[in-house]
Image (cartoon, rainbow, N blue to C red; front, side, top):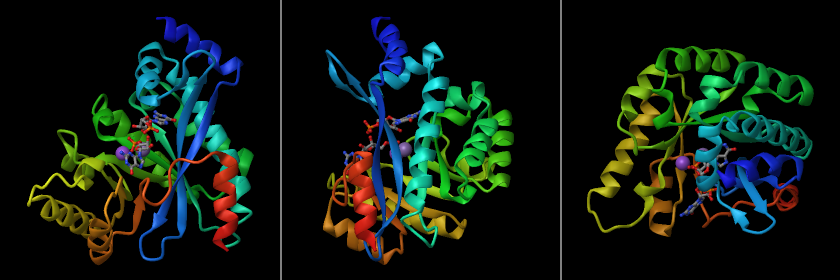
Length: 254
Ligand code: G
Ligand code: G
Ligand code: MN
Ligand code: NA
């Protein structure tokens, strides 16, 4: 409860910010886009992880203004950074949680962002976690279809960890699949590479691009390249960066 009231105040005090983790193309290691990740710099407690405060934001309803902040701030950065990439070849991924799909007028918020910042809809990608869409599958499906029709990208986040991963691919119009980090930890299971290969192959057969999250080894990187997995996002390539550092990395891209 204390954290809830702290979180309410955090907005006014500018304690919330976004970090940007590069998503790189596996074939040449260049930045294809970023995932926007919320950060909370608490004056007493230091940096608080989103895995701590997102659940509190969700149960208190604060996730709506929080999500609007993330979308707004990520859009602003995207429109700035697109100026550094004349080919318009840059994406910005924003995480969306269940309550946002249910409560927030996400379609209107996305329209406002496109209007205000004037970037192509395809440059924005929304990351949806498996566990969430089932709260209200009919409504979620309609919402996601509207966003897809607007041209916005839709990524299925944390793929492989939920209970209904495969049915999500039937129900919702994703264009990108993000393989959960757990499939990229080398835990010695001989089946792991087989599952990895099957996920990538299935995604491609369904016309989806693939992001491998949390790739840790050179061996997996080589394996994923051979499978023509398009993207990777991991500390091995780049950690979440401040906006300034992210901008610098993009300038170095040319
Ligand atoms: O950055 P980190 O690994 O600590 O993030 C932990 C979790 O918080 C991730 O699962 C991520 O999806 C989630 N998260 C980060 N930023 C946002 C955000 O803006 N909105 C939502 N809903 N979740 C976020
Ligand atoms: O759950 P979601 O995929 O939205 O969140 C991604 C989270 O994974 C971010 O918080 C980010 O900090 C974290 N992350 C990114 N790369 C790596 C990595 O290479 N290893 C680990 N353990 N975590 C990572
Ligand atoms: Mn994510
Ligand atoms: Na993920």
